[in-house]
Image (cartoon, rainbow over all chains, first blue to last red; front, side, top):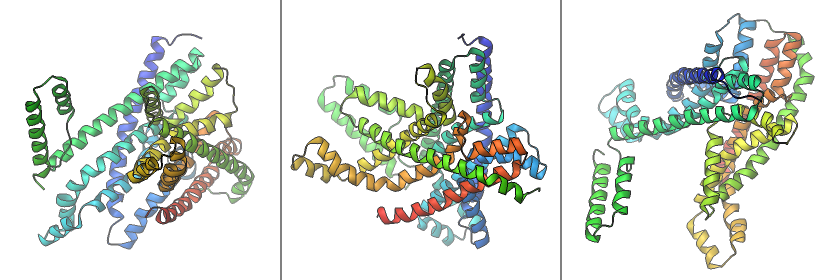
Length: 262
Length: 216
């Protein structure tokens, strides 16, 4: 039983940085895959549709950990491709979560009103223009919440790379445990580190969603500042009529912002 | 690419052993997740803050941290707390606990989805609280959420290989040992990978059929 020394803390922090990098790179790859495969599932050509469908079923069907083992051990032995562990991990995570992301993209594109597409056709837009200028801007805010969930799943998935010897947080935890011989403190600290990262991601995605919705002129609900002001108004002992007019004007402005632009 | 059918034959007996362990862990873990999730969901509707807040905090924390690290935590820390369990039992608890935080959300949505009239009817009949839950609300809520629960069983199937890190000889554990002894890595891991697709793809098709029947 010994304390976690400054050197060991440094090990955990370095691991944290690797985890952040893994998350960022795999998320970037996932987004690329999602935007390539998702729309491909509604392509005119049956062959493209089938290929995209097969991709999603295969990469969602296997476990991320199994895929990682495959990329780490089978690619080098079977095909002679050896990847740096970090990039092998990014490939495995990006391909897996890309398959989930593709379904998010497909669902959000399908949720755009058909009338919007028809308007694009009526204006003589090419299919590419329709996607870029009409459908995607409207589908984008719909995608953000499920993408946020996926991002947290991806962050948790990065812990798997420690099994392959990539020095992320989970790997650092094993080293620190070996050094101190005391499991409870180090694993508690490490779980907290993951939680803080996940919480940061969730908050960030919420800001992104708010911006995207505001960009479309949709109602985003009261912001944190609005809610704070409302609470202060409620807490202050107001003369009754003033409070009523305040609430009425607030709801009027909310409905005006919701009604505008649509 | 080097592919040796004989190696696949050699691996098969161990593969079946591993498959059995994987399926056992999945079944037990899912049962635990279903049961615990319901407990969380009911606790989150408790009229007492002292019950609601800790449960909300714990489920939120467990949901947002990696299962792999939780498995290590349980495996190393439970014995320090004087609870020594087998690797399999620890794995099942880890899987069940992790996924119970997801099923809790599913139940919550299911309970919220029961029409308000059902509650009012139970009140009008002056049914006791327990009876209201047991014979009016839960049967309707659970029926609605069965497909969503099934989705989590499939997700769990894909997370079960993680229990090999604490020494459970599931499919992945067997494949790793076989690969270490014979260097027939390509065959072992490919067989296991195909097994996962062979399990999860039909399961998701089945679930979609179930969803069409149950949720209308």
